[in-house]
Length: 168
Image (tube, rainbow, N blue to C red; front, top):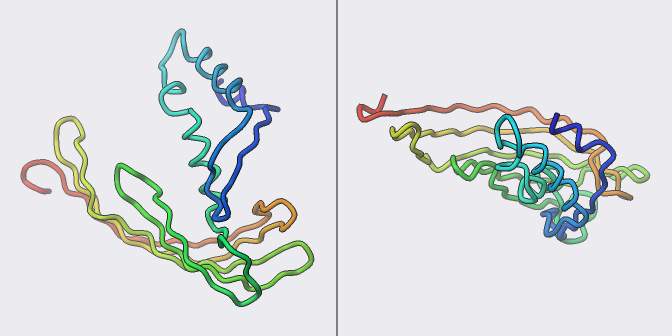
């Protein structure tokens, strides 16, 4: 029901040269409708997590590969993005502009996904999570819009969880 409110809604995301959303314009009406829809009956989940920051993070996830400077075929650059604040999961990627064919740029992605063995309290118990992984693939970007038109990324990982006073 909440996501039906998104239909035909327009807003503008202003990005920096690295693809991070700096500001979103025209989203106040949508956020007010979400707030009103969750005001009565049911939970207030929409009010607690669907906000401007939610949209900034969602858009940045799909645009965080921008190089921040002009690049030519064969150039590489490195990006780092915090994926989950509570678990301190970060992606560190090396990107390479493989080719430009017309208005489509193909960017090769190799990266690692790591966390800093972050811990959190769940129902009063300490939970520690460690995770390491990798990713490999590509994205194809429409140079006119800066948006992904195709992507293929394979990811793998290994992790562990310990919780409670005995560390199991």
